[in-house]
Image 1 (cartoon, one colour):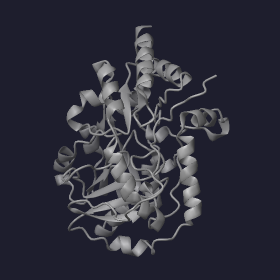
Image 2: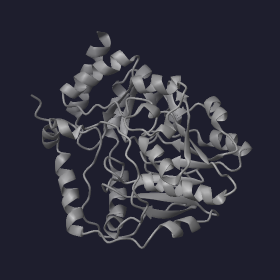
Image 3: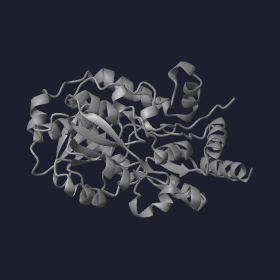
Image 4: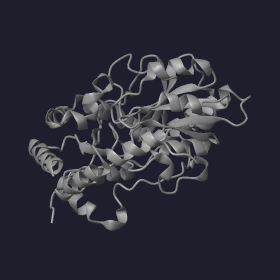
Length: 375
């Protein structure tokens, strides 16, 4: 029996802050929201407001993505249209994207995948032919560091569980200067005041469960279905509560200051064929998890089983293309295959790089990789 298990992602949350200053973003106006999904929903509301003449609006999503993207579209009455990704790259297949664009397209969602950026200049150039389509940058799995790193018309951030600067909830929509935020004023009420005792209890419990010894116990609780991806409808779009706003700045600063040593050590030991960030180095920044692209589903599943048996925090992320995820609504289902998304989903494995990952953990990961790859 394993008595110690690493979670796939997650750093402890700072429970107090000496400053209530919220982060600023050069060239963008932030709108602070209750979740990252709500941020995307508000982005789509703004896109609809900009083009009321489009009676049946659509948004293009990657065919391999978090189901929360579809939840935001469904909430706003915008039809999700899927475009394929590359089998060797989480970025959108531009040929597939061109086929999905239409006069009904009000937005294209470009996902930063665990710290690997989309090719935003290429997407913007492609969208010149479709002036109603906003470029929506989904940075829920990454946090912007430094000036000039954002390029979308609208940028979504998330502070949910396991995200870069987690507060177990909250998000932000960054609106490029020059775009109106009237829609935000219409749908958002005054920020609510959460019961600080309740929030503090949740944050303390989360921090405790990140401990590898407690996480090992949690992992043995079958009804929790840890790591199981399902579609969950978005319930509302509201402002971020004041208590999370007060904690955000300190947690962002701490995340940016964290060492990247675990990711660097994994990079140094991985075969180049499996090292997705290494192969996409010009688009890779700080990683939320380290994505490994295996040769086959068989190899991925073998590695996944051995690494999890050893309690080393491996994950297969969503495991399937978006349209095959449990409980996904019919409006997202499609009648065609997306070979790139399927191939990518079958071979992806992620390794943890959070602050609880020790040098000994990475050495054990390396031993299992070598042994499994040789068999």
